[in-house]
Length: 404
Image 1 (cartoon, helix red, strand yellow):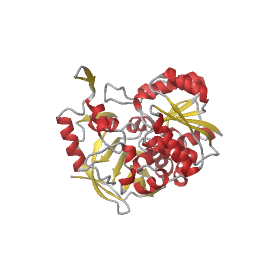
Image 2: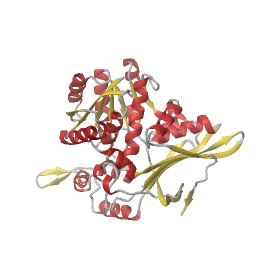
Image 3: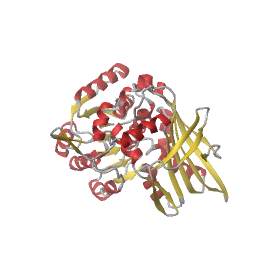
């Protein structure tokens, strides 16, 4: 049905390569490209071993539009699945426009020199993509991504009007390391240490990072965990596309051990993103820290436990107040046994594959730049059940956030 170019050979790129290989009727030809070809080749070899399919590999600097254009002209993909760094969103979108290729990513653009991230830079491409007859689908991971679709499903299926939204992301897994991040350390730490923004009464309110926390009890016996309010990009699109929302918040779990290490690293300056002089050159402390921390893609063999990610949507149905909770549980070892990655990579890579699948099939296809909640949620929800991320619903919701 189509040719696919995957850009990024980290943990998520591994999952996307495997899942595309599992759906040959949609992804007829798959190419995996990244800065380090040896990583691409190792993933390709694993895909061959597990599925019998051969995928091509290429070198590319995803921040170099000219390189990307040359690669796309040579490989002639129908769609690019971008799972490298969010700094590279705009360079890849530019290359797609120059070569007539559809685009999909999992995280919104952020400039390398600031931890401020928002969709405005990418939304500004809407008219150019529309005029070119191309589609760009933004944030097709889990959060953002699946959480957007869960919200749309509740708004369409379970409630007459949505008024409150709490997205809760709990990773109940344990990798056994003194300190490690479950996805790219540089992006993870920038995200966690950025000021929090939550939406209430028509505006976004700014508060210090992780300054408000609650406790959340996951369903199905996963456990109770402290969760901290932080900013996440899907809030920006969801309050835009569901204007009846009066409050929208994002919560993520962190262990005491993670927070203590993070506090020390901040105190000694290792989370800084500005370059500092060092022995005749310049070094960005956070990039150096990334180089010495465990590689997230290598955490799969040792990570045990589950992720629990979902949306609690409050509103009205038949004139009465009601809340609905839609969630997924993903087991780290199940993910590792299937594709060789832990569940955090799996829960991002599977939705990226499914978003691309729906685009290539024409189910989700409209020229312009879009977020997932702007499309019919039902086909995506059905694919989640079929391709490894089954969802569950509590209606009315039996979970809540309890302030400590």
